[in-house]
Image (cartoon, rainbow, N blue to C red; front, side, top):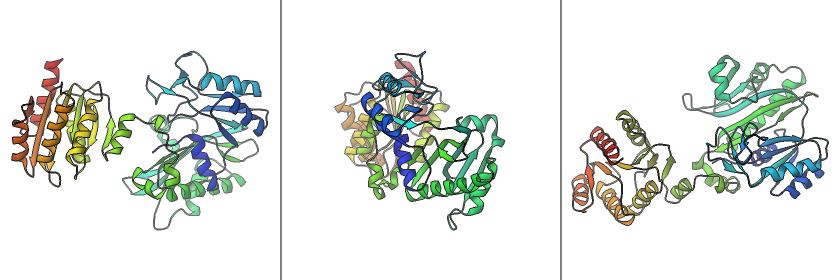
Length: 398
């Protein structure tokens, strides 16, 4: 689960992470009020959407104009720029061409920036540890730094048995070229961010840029936090920060039915039980020249109703021109899958090719249900056969 910048800064501040003062605004008038309360002479007006690259982004109705993060020097300019941003669609590298509508702003006090650095924390799956990433190349996307100048990224893994120690924070501070009192300030900053990461079950904490001010202070000029959905039951206060307007409606609907769904750019819908099998299914579709339209794992204990919901979810994507159902029946019975597929196909008036590959518990009964349904369902003997058939069917139907 993602949250907005201002929400991330509020959470981090509670743990002792230094952030500039600011306030959220939903109207130009509210933006001016926040600016007056902060005092001048410089303010930054920031669009709040769940996407990076806001400053370099452009608004759809003014593609040659200013971006989604603006530095202004008067109360009047705060209101004027707020009006130009609110309720307008901002397009960035991460939003895609459709962009995101800006429904709220964050008005923040200006900062005297001397240096821009990068600080991030995430779970390194290779080591199973929280890993601190830092770079002197702040303000840039870390993927670009990793590609162009990987030597400028330092990584420090923290053993969960000991937690973060002084030598971890000092190593990061020295790698960032900090000196004198800045080292101690950075150490406290990193310690606080790490504690927030662990306590709140984060997947990512990213401070980009982390700045050094003219007076030598360390501040989080921007902040991004992403949380492990599976741990949100422990953090109801964090879950309340969810902004569903920033999420894919299909993914929200999927969550209601306990489905793991991620929309992709292809045209072949996939319904699979098991994340690993779903990944393999998408890979083999590409191997046979097709493009998967989604990742969809119905889980090991799906009911007929959940399968029906999954099928309808796939068909809600207008890009889908064919569907591959790939089920290995272990905990999940093939006859339950077959009943769900048939029920959903009838309810939505199936209009695209459907290929089903079943194997495992009650497979013969499942195949019988499909065969006797009277629906134009193509049966496959194995995964390769299924992928070949669905790709061929989609191409012939085009």
